[in-house]
Length: 247
Image (tube, rainbow, N blue to C red; front, top):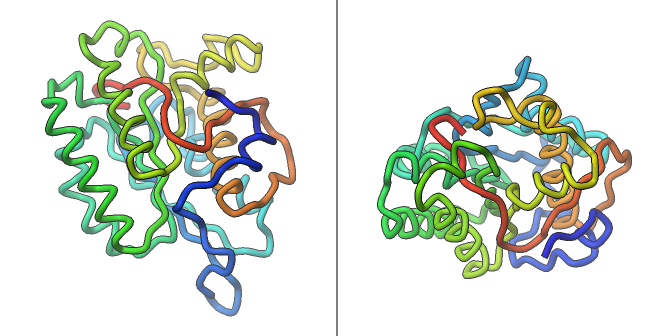
């Protein structure tokens, strides 16, 4: 089920919550989020680094949560699969963020990572983050030509949804979101996707950042102050589609 922004604020009941009183930096309450993933997080397809989703997310959250000092750290590396990201995860956890947004499941079907291994490692990664006291949001792959043409890609998308349900953590359903944006006319196919048939471009990243901001704020019980995009988001589990070689 895909919910609109208002429903998301009212119904996010995940066991992971963003602390109402975040740690203090230089006398100001602070919230640190790590955007962890592959090229969709790195921002491949964006015209400038400022247009990638983590940078846009930081801007939206700073506007909504002022005077809270919000920092979104981009830890996306294009082309990575779950094996690569699990090798990096200890260092990500060591940064001690309040939250990690883990975008995963895109390159794995392209690289033919066994589904059983993908599921086991993703579960282990979520456990490690939660044991460290870090709130977690999962993000599924995008609906794109490359993944549609990759045999079995939907099984990785569905696995992310199932893991979200198992751990009772939110899943950003990019697959469903992208279809909704197009259906509602919030964006055109040309402004949503890059010409490689795999990556988003500026318009897609702007909508994605807004959807993620809605989810973060729902976990805090806050409300977005300025509506910058017409999007829908789902506070718990399930939704979207895998990415590819550099998602």
